[in-house]
Length: 304
Image 1: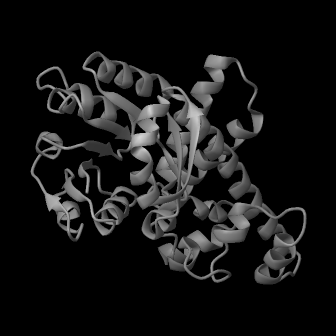
Image 2: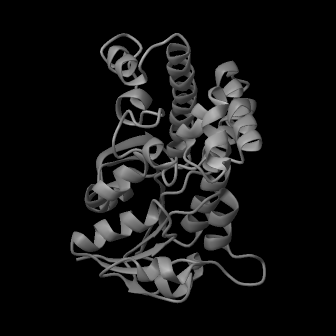
């Protein structure tokens, strides 16, 4: 049994913490929203991130953005971060999707205190978090990954070592940029078919078994009523928020600027999601709601 501190218990972090509990680990859980900590059955709710860090073997975070990760670990200038509270033997794992520069800066600060740190953003969405089938994309030293692997395997099905600190974040933003492009293209293709008299369910099956098949279509269909158990079937509630996809696309654009890479499709996807967010007030909806950008009548039904 490993003593784990876990901070950040939203749509992804909550299920991940529950899977650690189910695997037999002792998990101290903390979130700014106390109800989220109490919802982790079998976890030990605490009232601060510092309390979650005290005496644990491993500390894990799942937070919205780089500024939150930096604040958690490094402090805010008035109060020290949790790196000050962790024992020298503790392993630090940040599963947030953030900019690589912040990931490297926090890992360097951890190393100065003798702590190993991994950046380990995840892929697989809320369903993967619930079912324990996430993919962990890891940056950091190999010995630290070896220590962390049993915990990753309790929360996920795949673990990839992308390279040194920050490499996990680079790989993740590449993945999410492609996912955004796929989802926007899938929504566009389905809308074109319906405009020309096709049943979206029939068209989906045709494309799934043809050269246009992709993850967005195969397991996360954006057209309402075509696939069970996906956000499109529940008004696009839950899932991976448009706000978060827009943030990740921004990270991809920052990475492209730093490396002078050409990413025209990623840039277009970012603009499409930004327009969708603004026109349809869609920031808190799942990213598959981009379907509304091509079918305004769907958004109108929500307002009526």
